[in-house]
Length: 398
Image (tube, rainbow, N blue to C red; front, side, top):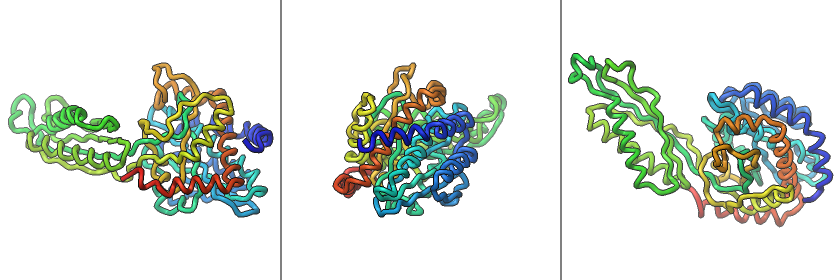
């Protein structure tokens, strides 16, 4: 790790501000596209450290892009923040720590940009858990000329950058006819029967799917009272898979099953694709190995995926098709249920707000700063990264 002592001093100086930011975001959870406080706190801190910040980025009120251009030309390095919370369970995905690491890494690497040359970007995309704030940024070309995009996600295990799943969703609605459930049930057309048939079909469908495919569904509307034949039901399904093309095939099968359930019950059906689903993440292994090596230098034991897939999806996947990208996992505790990742749990929500977790985040800030320095000072390293990225569409995707 180049400039290790200097990196340590810089991060130590940033520690109070970064921990304050992380605590405030953790203690004030905001849902996607509503992260007004979290966004404002970040923008205030980043401006204080000399970055130019474009607020309301890509037309999203809780999005921003910050940039610091060094005095010498060099690579364009993007650090990713995330800061939306989950309904009811707050920051159970630890986005306050993703924010802390992304912002802290950008602020720290800025101190080397004038000397080594380069442009440092911090992206604040909202709503990773829902809307996918990185997607409008991609459409606007925000990452087209980035040389690397770096992110770290908290979990209950330390890992190199693995490949996440593709994800997309669909709404399915059934339309029947209401009737009195006791006096004249024969006059009704039961939309809930159609929905139950659909869920049974999905359960059977899982037997004939690839091991990496996941189908999740919830019923949003299932009727209004037991004495009324339900005339309307609505469900939402998500499909995940290692490849985006398999997500598409799964959604097509869901649509076919819904049409079958409608015919069987006499209902009408409407299927609406959510759109804007996430592609699978293409983790750049040259970048990943360098970053993971520095994690081990910090004294952490990693689980190595070497680019293999693991469950979960993120809009960083879409970024990874535009520029070389990685997302490491930093272990901030041991999940009580024994799972490796522990995401979206009460345990992780509590753990993400502790100083112990934030101390681990500080170590990962040092890791990303070190990778950024290498990008600015080792042309051959950057060339290897770009060579791997040139083949990204040959090995992954649609």
